Structures are given as structure tokens and as C-alpha cells.
Length: 262
Image 1: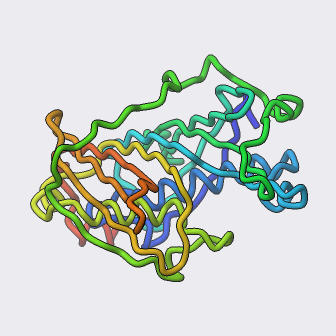
Image 2: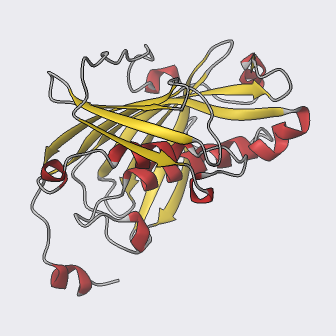
């Protein structure tokens, strides 16, 4: 811990890297959430600690700004994470992901977490966390006002996905990262071949389970964003996601990457 920050260094694997040598959205979410779990473990508030009191951590929102920084296979990067705000029902964690060798920024963002009572399915107070956690509001990356997504009048593309065991987390719910992967499958090929992801805002709203049929609807908004809305068979919105894209940077020749010094 340093000035209220938790830091942990990871090594990228082949499955973490896109063809443009950037960390995938799934990897960004996975390593950030792993760091959150490690921070809570230090204070005995990890998922396996609070489940004994019939409680569960739930991530409800995240926003990530992604830089054009390359990350090659087997390179080290560091996740910095800190609690920037604690309310009666919510904990806000901000984060940065940087290259270990030169501290170049890979991504940064903010997230909202709640504690759910497994018996009542209601949110529990989080103010007891103030006794253990260091709150650093001066390091807040931005205000925590909820982002309101526009309501699309029509959809440019729709697809369906039936949840498989590969989509589930250890609670047997569809994983929050699976929703993001499903949503981004609706991106047009012409965007994916010419642009890279610049930012991602996600609202997780309801749980879904094995064999649930999800419909993902994508619409291109007036401000050049893409809105992805996932609904269940009852038409209830279970997750909504806003993605922004930017022109792809030039990429290194594969021979240059393979011949670098490890």
C-alpha cells in the first residue's frame, strides 16, 4: 500500500493481447477486479470472507478510458487501485493500469461496488468498511454521477446468445465480463478492422443464469458512440454498455515483436 493505493503487478499472457498488441477489454476488467479482490483480502472483506455472513460483492458500474499503449506477451504491467469515495450503500474504486517498465498509462477508470445480502437480495450498508479502508477522495478520477444512456429509437444490429457454462462465474451467474464480450460481438466488422476501443462504460443491472437467452441490440448514437443493450427473455434490460472507438494506431511488424529482448 502506498498513500492509500494498492498496487499489484501482473504478466500478460497470449490470451490477454489483441492483434494490435493491446490488452483486451476482458483482460482490463479481469486484472482490475482481481486487484480489488486482493485489496479486500488484505482487510478480510474478500468474497470468501463475507459469504460466511451471507453477503456477496456486486460490481454495478465501471468506466474505462483506454490509451493506445501497446502491451506485448510476457510483459509486466501494474494495476493501481484506491477507494475514492464511500457512501452508505456504495464503494467507489478508481484505478490505473500502467506498464511496469516506464509507467506509461494503459487504461484508467472508476467503478462502483455494492454488498448484497444473499438472503434478502437487498443492498447492505457499506459504512463499516470505513474502519479498515483508506479513503483518498483527492485521487478521484472524476465525479461519480451515474451516466445516463440514451434510449435508442431503432437498432442497427441484434443478435441472440444463450448462456453456456463458459459464461458463468463461481456464483453460477453470467459473469460481468461475459456481458461485455457478448455486447462487443455486435460491433460492425468495418469498425473492428479500422478502429480500436477508446472507452467503455458498463451498467450491470440484473443477474442471468445458465441457458438464459440474451438479446443484444446495438445502435450507433448521434455522438458517434455505440450503445449495446442486453435483455432477457422477459424483455428486462440486464446490462447496458456504451463503447467509443478511435482510429487504430500503427502496429509493429510481427517479426519485430517476436525478436524483442525478453
